[in-house]
Image (cartoon, rainbow, N blue to C red; front, side, top):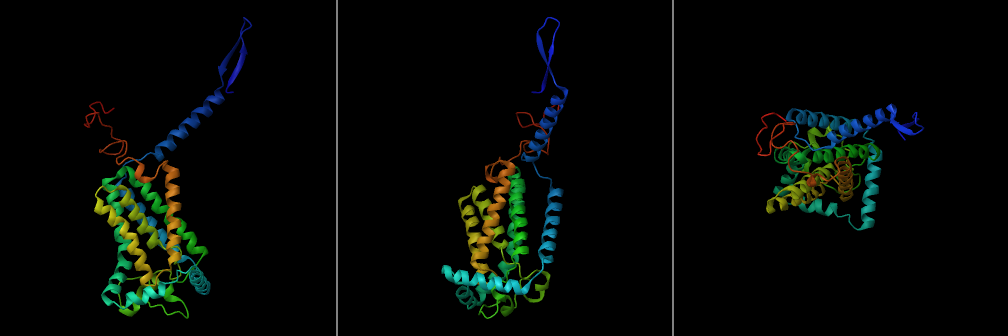
Length: 300
């Protein structure tokens, strides 16, 4: 295929390349090279990353808060989740909520933890990856973006009230009781966020992403341990403050698994298995270096 057969004057046959086949081959080769360049780890550009994260979070917040709250359905779903957990024997959120709420300094600390670290730690890990592991940054970022994107699907199709908003249950809204400032979960800022988007829990999705990135990439043992403790502490916090059920956390884990799958399919490896530095080395994007690490005099 891709060749045409002609007969010479001596009666022998010869083959000549088909121009159409050659064009198709070159086009496919060019497309493959472009795709390969897109998938290759490269040093991220700061201005682009800041803009991308800002626009993405704005879009995420806009879509999440634009999803119809569907209060009645969200409350019915909460009752179903609560009954399912009772059947599974894991419905201890109310006990944990009351126990932690009895220790004022602890529950107030957890309220602030819930309101702030979700953003601070996630941004901190992104900055760390950007500065210290630029070859892995884009793949890790894709995990986070894909995780968040699929979570929006859950918010749309499965509105869910958090335990603190359930009817006929004795959950304590710890932010209201202790007048904690700054949380969008309840209080004066509750109208800025969809209160019935509890499934899946992105507090778990994002914190587990942070923990796994730190554990897989950090070289200092105690830092790796802290990485694993962070999502574990977050799980305790979201239950203690009555913002999520255990099963919401499972939903967040499933979304994260989807995010890792998308990233691995695109880059061919999980983020921590990619090179720490991109192929262009420690210099600027696309700048080639000589074997000594110094710029090549010819620029080649």
